[in-house]
Length: 114
Length: 111
Image (cartoon, rainbow over all chains, first blue to last red; front, side, top):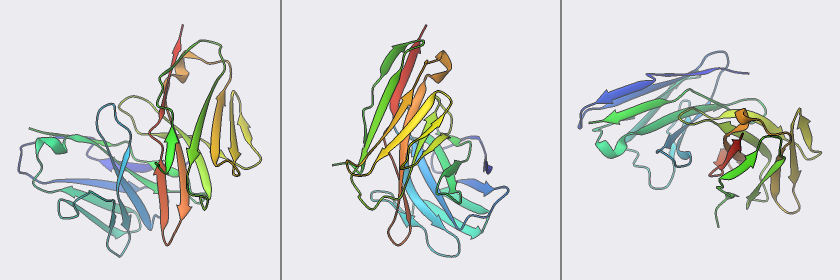
């Protein structure tokens, strides 16, 4: 199957700092990528759809000014958590769709905000 | 009503048992369907796509019932390694691709 990478895999930062997470499709192009967040023992929640060359589409309740998404190329989408606070600590995962609509997930980024 | 609904479980079953999960979806325009497996603190991994004719992969069988708008996953001869959360995923198109996840069903296979 296709491979999606994420970087970093784990980040610990101080409250108030911004954190950038990268999602790359390694062997295929993705005009669309998806960003999710998962809190402990909870289900995966779609945050936003990242569209190459245009603005991201955010799910209801997700602040677009707090979670900045940039999809600058067909293989890279970035999520920046701005002015992170402890409540933003979570597992952030991206995915890119394959040709049959299946999602290929990155390995996730575990964010801890102190 | 949620777009995609699953029984969260947990389902605790002994090794060797057969277990089945259902997942209902509300959007009749949904086009493609998948089962994923997610282990604790890991990303979801594709288990199998779900086709209208039903499909089987070893001990796993997936079925789609469009009329009743549900998909199912049957696991035969459960192994300890099957313990995980099983997510159903529904894709629909409405201007852009929309991916909707169920909340997942937790399976615990007991020795």
